[in-house]
Length: 340
Image (cartoon, rainbow, N blue to C red; front, top):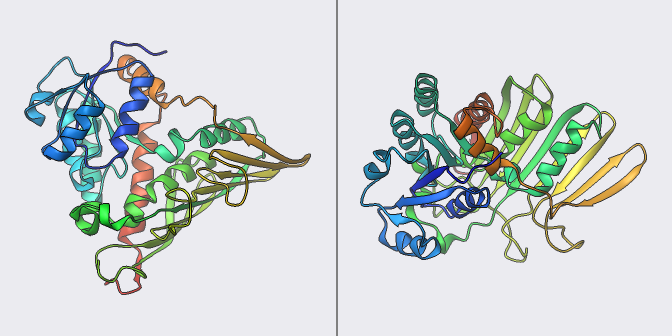
């Protein structure tokens, strides 16, 4: 399915997720051609990590290179959609870190340009696409292991690491809000596992309970969802304590009519070492599956889609609907804990 002839470049490396995005393409056989980042310190570290890629003098240099088929970005969140629009207008496909879009106005323009150009606007929802346990859960659900899925419960706790955060992390207009940002992962998983192609936000709320010194930082958010394939609940926060040996105890529970699956993606507290733990409970018993060696197909599928104009990695309509849910949850959220 893959081809080593796909050539990609990077514009924007403000979030470290760019490393995972680049690596998933390299694993699948793509060629990393060039990158551009205006921040000298970020560029120096990135160049040392990927010496095979030349450092471009400008973003335009990459956009104008007709040999580059795919542009990858993890720039400042508010800048990601405008860049993606330019990428598509230059006849290239785009793979961007989440949140790939930070406002409903941006979403409307991205949808318009994507429809006009026919290019791919793929958001890398890494907590599903690049987590082996989530990939395995998808296989089990598709095989009918828990019957009809009726609800997902997704939790995305994160550690703030405040001293390491750049200024834009604390500016709501630039990061988009906690439900736009972190919860986009859970919106994606809700749609995927319930099979919903239409959905709405029933209720949502955000708060700043812990960080009054950063009044625009939302450190808690949750949302209730209803789709044509099931319902969902999402909770995200910036409260992971320093005592946890990883950045967050991300979990997903998928409830079916004949059983349920729980994913403990990054840690099993007081349990098994490592991550990618899957627990399946069905009519026959309780089953544990270690998913550490499950193959991750997103990179191969995306390359195939770019080369053959297919839609195997993630449907474009799904990308936009997951984003729309996150944006509407954020826009309509009750604002608690000192937020106004």
